[in-house]
Length: 130
Image 1 (cartoon, rainbow, N blue to C red):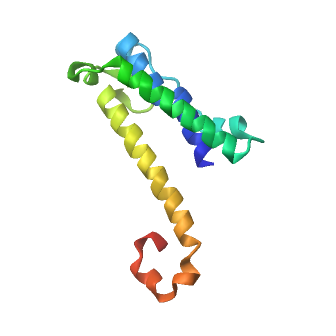
Image 2: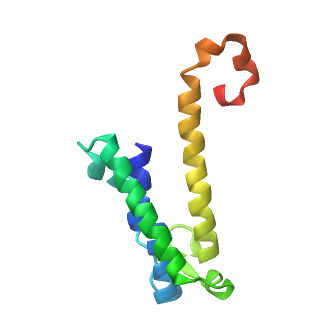
């Protein structure tokens, strides 16, 4: 479930990890991302509640990020990712953006493929159908 995954990222990844870098630098590695937490945390919750939770957490994280008033030097500080090694806040925030876009693409492909039969021969020209 994409929305559960995004919520978990809002709780434990992006801004939380920027904070670790700002406070501890490379001396405190991040906890590994729990790729199963989304299933436990979202179980039994209606999609409307999950969407509301995501919207609230994302808004809070954006406020927190703005409040940090990161300057160019802050973006080049170094942190330690458990699998990737040295990373910077600049890379982390860029990855946050690209990660969201990857999931938007994923969702749009699933939605578009529901129309594959209806579009008929035009499917050949629509890359989203592949």
